[in-house]
Image 1 (cartoon, one colour):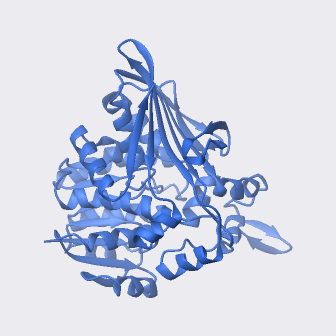
Image 2 (tube, rainbow, N blue to C red):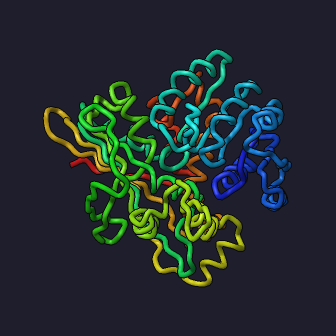
Image 3 (cartoon, helix red, strand yellow):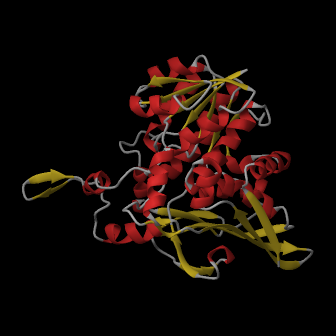
Length: 411
């Protein structure tokens, strides 16, 4: 039976651990985090797990723990990516990351030059994992992750592809102050970063919160909502792989909307998401750190989620959509793909999870499952948009078993 090391037991890492605990092919799960209390709390709920305190900054500690496992799942924030990748290589094990890594190029900040860093991951780490006959898969949450798989499935309906729009609208909103249902540091980092889009066959930078579009989604009862440019990995992955996996797509966009955008946009405009030190009334502060210190963490335990629900919700809906425009039999065609997944209340009733944990955590778990059970056999480093057609179908079948379904309308 396989052993798995999970780095980070936040909302996503804990969800992966719970699902792996149910798998007959998994014999042991090592749940690790710097927060010993969080580790202990999670391990008590699992049958096959043991806890371990690990400093995510320590490649040595990660590698030592990874030497005994078949898969290392990194669910830590972006700045821990490089040392986690290096530790997996040192330990000689397979690797999975919910996102990518922003500090590959060691530019001094984990938030600088992240696009070139992702390309370096393909080139450098791809060769190094292949050399030890192991696999690394990056971008394995819901977005990136599930949305990349869905884009692959949608493009299959076309003979050629011109444009792919990926759109995520998160409408779950609690009555208590809770701007984000996932990692606040990752959310705010994405909000303040320049975004990227693949336009006319080239990656270009776009400004945060720019180029708004308005859409009506049936999942929102026909409500028209605004979607904006948002720093995400998908256009980088899919732009690089457009010819091989996306039938020559020339334009690829990621758009985001919802309560998190409404909260963060005025902070960005006021300069409060800046990571530069400022002297205010004689004290040196970093605005980003000040804001972050006032944002509660994403809920992850049953009792935390229940308390939020019991207090009441303002809204509980969302949309997760891929639009693929192209040609079919010489005609202009749109493959309009929508994920159908439980909202917050249904997710909690089904499994004690938030909707974010249900979709992102379980989408990540499915990549863990496919690695553990040998369905992903490519060696080297691949992003979640690089599965074979058979692997795409297998992934979506597994997702359906967890209540995560999709539909595609061709028009």
